[in-house]
Length: 224
Image 1: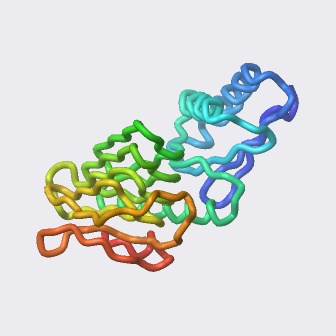
Image 2: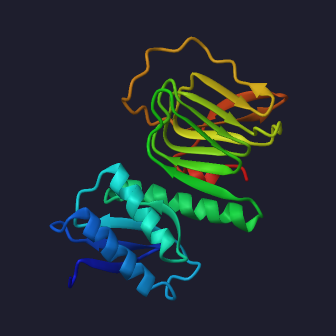
Image 3: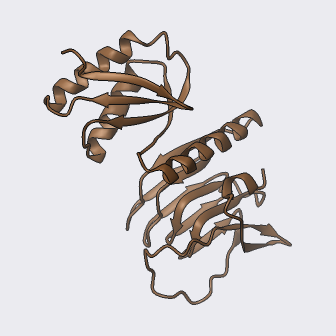
């Protein structure tokens, strides 16, 4: 079907226009064909991707991303939205991750919010594009950057090393540990999703975890 799927490029990524009228199963087939046809053009490229023209559920987004990865050599580093400020943070996160890779460190992105009972575990540094709610946990053997609020549990430097950090745009963890060092939290107020806009970073200093406010340019100021 003509113009069912249209791929356009933007800075650091591509935008995929999806027909909003055809059945989703048919759309998946069209996306598979389009990216298979363009596989040589996208070979081994690392890009952000956005979907437009159709309202998608989280499951549909995952299915589309899987189809694209299966039918091309494109490396999708994150899925961006239309919100200008959010996109700005996404692109900064991409640039930060690339700097990590240039230094020989692997990293990954997770788009979404961790809710009660969910646990996300990785052996690489991770950038979370969302919040970590109370009752959930994120575990990394390296560093954790949260472009949202940390209200649950975070464990960085899971290999026992204290030379790692946890950073978030809002920091109010239930529990926080870096390497073998635990952060001693004070009595917490009732958790609220109201943004406090108080970026902070937790790291090891003098054999203990300290938490300090950081500037608005969160990702630019993180110690690498």
